[in-house]
Image (cartoon, rainbow, N blue to C red):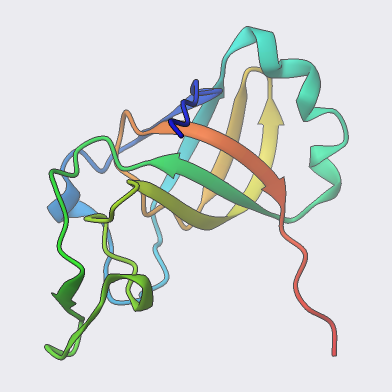
Length: 130
C-alpha cells in the first residue's frame, strides 16, 4: 500500500540546516511561524484554546535511514527508540507552544524544525492526566 500526503503548510524560522536544530531533547528557545495554506485555514477554528500543539511534519532533508543508529549518548539503539530524522517514513513530531494566531500564521515557540519543513498535520496537545 502506498500512502501519500499533501502538506497543509510550511515552517518559517531561523533554523536553516538540520545541524542548526536543537538535539538531545533540549528545549529550544527558537521562535517561528507556521504558514497554513488557504484551503486549510478553516480547520484552525478554536485552536487558540490550546497552549501547546502537536505538529506532524515531513523530514524533507533526510536522506535514507538505518534501523540501528547512535543515540545522543553514543549508544546504538533501534531507530524507533530515537528521535532521529533518518527513519523508514520521514515523519517527525514536535510539541510546540502556540503563542498566537494571525491568519495564515501560527506563531510558535520551542521550534526544532528547520525553515521550509512541510507541515502534514496539527493537533491539540493533550497531556495525560494522572
